[in-house]
Length: 164
Image (cartoon, rainbow, N blue to C red; front, side):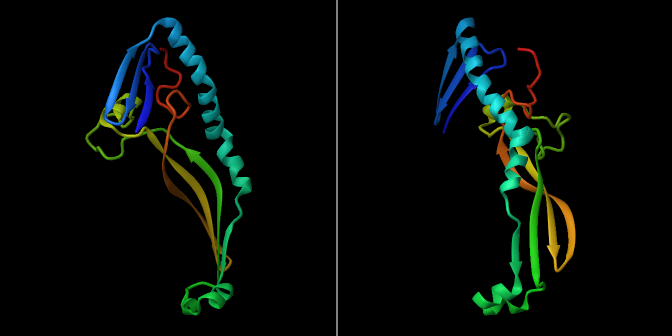
């Protein structure tokens, strides 16, 4: 495991490699240079969150299964409960990191430093609108596609917009 974490003040740097970690107190000039270097990555991640994932959907083709095609390859599938199935994704959304496993917590927001100290990844769930068409009858629902890492300082981060 390798990770670099800059504190909210921007003046401290933690470098973690496996079970070893280094702490470095940065001067103001080094802190500014690091924040300028990170700005491009944060902007890129924000683009991914705001429009990049949904632009990616334009390249997805719906998944289609036809019983007649399947039986030719796998005769044991002739008793499936449908003749055709089509699955289409129509919208991706990334939320913010929350603590779902602690019902006693007053605030469910989780912050990057909490995750770092606990040895967890700072993640949020990726959800999608899914349309399922079975033999001409369709329904749409929201599906949780699992957690993805959130970049500290991005729009999905709880620290976004806070002063240093």
